[in-house]
Length: 157
Image 1 (cartoon, rainbow, N blue to C red):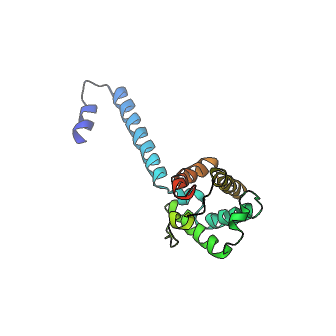
Image 2 (cartoon, rainbow, N blue to C red; image 1 turned 45 degrees about the vertical axis):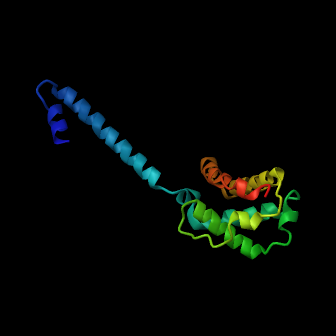
Image 3 (cartoon, rainbow, N blue to C red; image 1 turned 90 degrees about the vertical axis):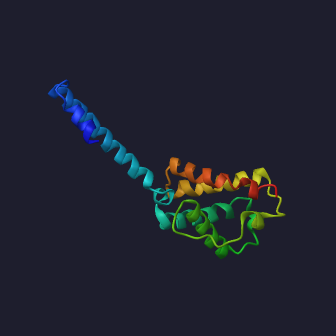
């Protein structure tokens, strides 16, 4: 780095050229620092942390409760346990501090033969819940992309 800076100060480059190069270098370093800090933020933080994840879960449960396409699948569920586990799961998937203590997705959904239409309806309910809570679309898409990897462990098994 020292050699690089010395080369910038060499007599072959005028003072104006050196100033322009140093200004450009400083701007690049500043922008890269901003980009680095932004990438350090987790999806958990971008979602709004635990408070927002709790709100998403509550709205998600309400969406499911009023969705005739999927409510029958949840009618006999222990809502309190479902809420606890979905909060843990969303938090963990978003790189938050939570540990998911529920069963695997395969174990939970095995034998249920959940159709693609039912799976998609639940995704729509989650999107509606995130909209209600005010989660930005880009952040929603990041969470949905992570959850989408679970589709083979849920639908059609």
